[in-house]
Length: 134
Picture 1 (spheres, rainbow, N blue to C red):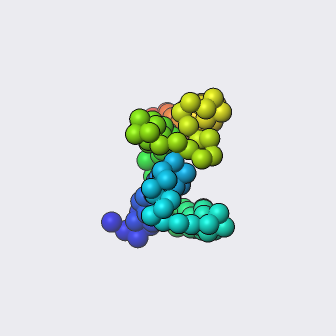
Picture 2: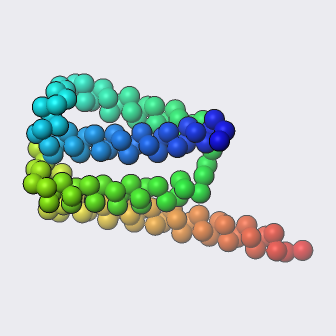
């Protein structure tokens, strides 16, 4: 595996870990007791994660999985929240599968992903048609 592909996978893993960390920290009191963090340190961690993600994405090549990652990440977040809800965890910030605003955000993100997916497929189709022409 070359270094640029490694950066791409590292970016995916870091994104999933950050979302998991923040959902756990918001929903599980035991997790907050285990890792006591102030709001400022959480904000700094979030900003550093975003900046590091942007930096890693700059060095990483475009991959086919980039097209599917937003949808997978959205579904992962839904599954994680449903699982935590069944385990009795309650969000301190209102992030819950029972919150209608959450579903609006999910629907919007899936719509934007689908729009990008269709655009990518159309570009791919037009490239293949261009190659087929003599």
